[in-house]
Length: 264
Image (cartoon, rainbow, N blue to C red; front, side, top):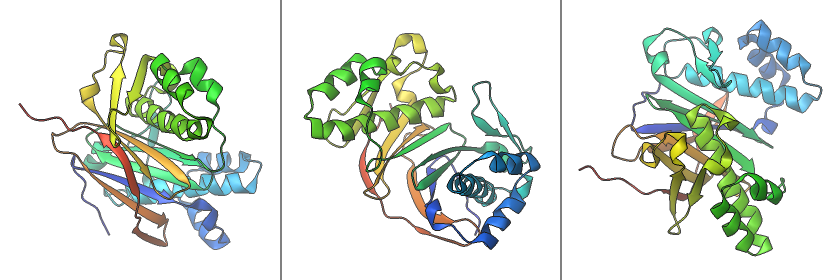
């Protein structure tokens, strides 16, 4: 099934890669890769990391082919000056696509949008211990202050709420950690609302971006940052997918989102 994608949609494809263990299927994934990608797979020491890498590359290649007339094995990628992968094919629809990948223990998410920059991040909040000292050293002062004022049992969740949003923003900008984490900050002025503040020296405007924070399952916390391409909020679609095998709609909990701007 082919997908039409415009600036009114953001699609998130979720692969629970621990479920992918069939050797014949993994060989099919490997067949889609370039020789350089196959060499990179072999450099991973642990089998689970090899399988995660295979599943990630297969997810990217097969899913992008749902949106443009490019075969999975024919996608070409290049990195920008900060190392963010971008599509290098000259097919028209392919050139409109933007994508971003994130993974954590047990889950890969591929985000896809059209004509707008996109960043996604996910964390397994059950298995990873929040490094609170990172917030104290690198987060904006107001974020660290809010975090430290919370009861200990709430600090873990709030740290990852900040962290996933920060990661999604720097990935959408395509500049990674060249953007200092204390040069922008997030606030939650109401229970289900996200607001970003950006230091003037970053030459960016909060109104340029929309954010969503969601839980694909109770184990995971994800954040999405997408450039505003229209006044109306884009539709989020989440699917659970096993590349080349199956897909289904994925129910999720939307925890909070950016406030909507109004046309003048």
